[in-house]
Image 1 (cartoon, rainbow, N blue to C red):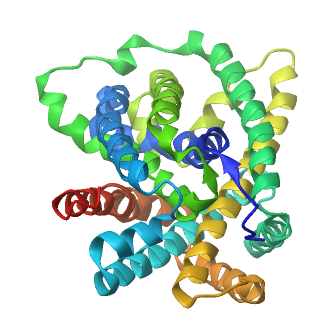
Image 2 (image 1 turned 180 degrees about the vertical axis):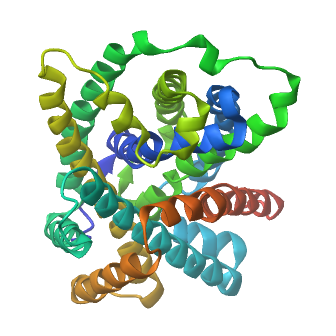
Length: 362
């Protein structure tokens, strides 16, 4: 599963990164920005991109020196053995927490929108079994599958947004004044918390060719994300208003359900849901792959297949334990988990970069 020849290009890695940010952006970003910044939520995207641009620049400096190493190896070399291993363990726990919430959110969405009478455990078990099957195929097939799903997702996303864009009301997006500066900064934390998940990919950066081109490819992807995430927030808040956007748990689905063109959209909505499920599946696979790489590194293992089942069971139990319902999950995401992402994805890498500069490691 984790063979030395199982490598992908930096372009493929950045496409996987888009998959990681795509589904959280669709289901989370508009609601969070509406809660924190109200009608000015659409400005949060531009502000939230600033730390990501800085982050990619720092990563580029790091990987010019460590082009063949994983992020764990870099952490150990820069911070030292004891502090480094402690930070790696924090990443392991943080990524597992991220994964269990993602799996739970996926299962909640399926039960709420399609199968309300089916036990949520059925969908959790289904995605974890599929994840194990895909993981055994290796990183290269995962990257190719992600590319295909991404193109379909983006096509469906743009199609639905073009249909609903005429429903946008400028009143829902204004007025904007200097009083919105602090709320917009606060709201931008949601976008930062989503986009810093690029660090998850670097757990297997030793399997990514062309890391020296990270800045070039990263900036292209960020330009794409600015367009997609801005459109997401503008369409959702602009269509239903800040109050409904702040209260809704599945906002984008509510928006597209209001479209009715000779029943065509209703059928395409089903296709969108299927591709969205595949995106959730691939996100779970990628994060799990990163977690397995950390475990392999920490314990000096040559093979992680024997512990895959144990890990899957822990994810299953964690996804049932983490919250009791969708509303509780959204509340915790808004107030706790998103800031944990910011710490893992921005604060810690910034510290590593600064220490590396001081010690002439970067």
